[in-house]
Length: 237
Ligand SMILES: Cc1cc2nc3c(=O)[nH]c(=O)nc-3n(C[C@H](O)[C@H](O)[C@H](O)COP(=O)(O)O)c2cc1C
Figure: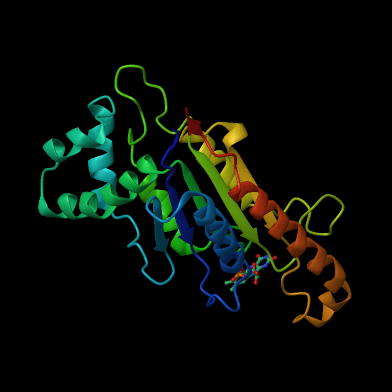
């Protein structure tokens, strides 16, 4: 008799485009469907940051965070005891569920289009809240609670940013996301990026000549997503 270990997936989308038009949404949908085939639906959580936007952080968020830092990075369970007013309470109520979702996920999957060389504002709002001081620091050891968490970022860009392209050096999306998740304590080997490039090749006349490269990029992204979603099952004998 063997038992399959329950796995959990937190699936985030942040494209402002509807699923039929959004490359990142199509790819994260493929990941999630492949993942659910292997692991079932019990551990699956979905959050659409564009449809249900998270309010941007405020000065009360910063004040509460600074107080937590002065207490030597109080863990989330101790934060309520440090709250001094209703505005800080509201900020914490907006933030705590996001931290819980990340803490309970074995894999965080995020669809993140490139907007103006960086990430959508809806995703940045999530980033700012999830960066709450001390949220992922193990009390005592100071190790990151996310050291075993897998993070898969599915990027979609209208243009191309690889070596030798005219826009090489203008990618402020992936380096930013890598720095952010590494600072949270995600291990380099658990941090994966999938790239769909030239997604606007069919629409923008100057990019029409790149339609074949766009199709190849999408095909490669679909293969990457399918492989990453089909990770080996862990079985307890
Ligand atoms: C507000 C906005 C800003 C964009 N900025 C860029 C950009 O800086 N570089 C780029 O290559 N594409 C840019 N694009 C194109 C998107 O990256 C591209 O359409 C991508 O496929 C969007 O992801 P989605 O298909 O999941 O919606 C932008 C699109 C929008 C809507």
